[in-house]
Amino acid sequence: MSGGHGAVEGSNKRVALLISVLALCLAFSETAGKGAQTEALGANVEASNQWAYFQARTIRATVVKTIDEAVGLLPPGTTDAAIQAKRAEWAKTLARWESEPATGEGRKELAEKAKASQEKRDLALHRYHHYELASAAFQIGIVLASAEVITGITALVFAGGLLGLAGAAMLGFGFFAPHALHLFG
Image (cartoon, rainbow, N blue to C red; front, side, top):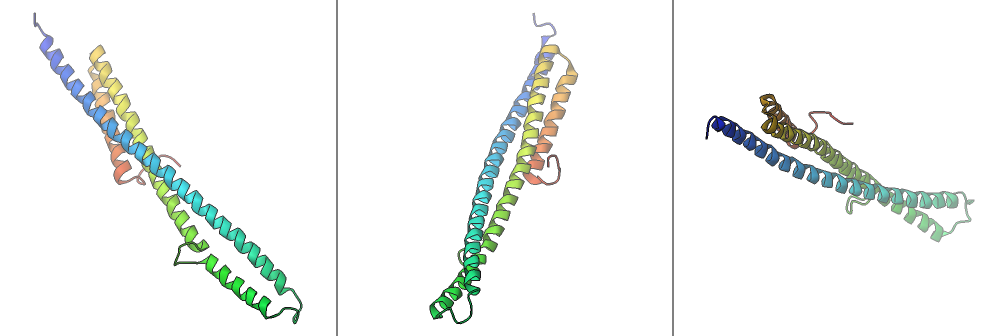
């Protein structure tokens, strides 16, 4: 009794193949999303650390500058050569703390590094959002295609396929052009 079941089985095989492809794409988008999320978190921690070091340098410089200014208020003739030498040393230290290209630990260099880390974080977050939307499209596409097997409503498999294409587009945007679509602030 094979009457008429061949067309249904062939249709189910095509739907199963579509579901398999959507599931594979879902795995790619989930993996990429987790990677982008991890990269964003790491870059955020890196930026926070650099800004904290920048702030510590600023506080130390403010303390040294305040002491130097206080010593500078002493009447002429009351400061000896040792105090003048110390003030010259403080001036060199303040200049080094402001910009220290050799070590990259001057305030100028720390601010540049922190801003670069923030840009890296923002790029990873743009990617992450695209990958999350791609994952959602793939998941809904899988559900719709699966529902077609049960209900026999052909429009569901087409909707699932279209969502798969939308998910693939979002995956592509996340990978190749994360700034092209402004989906989130």
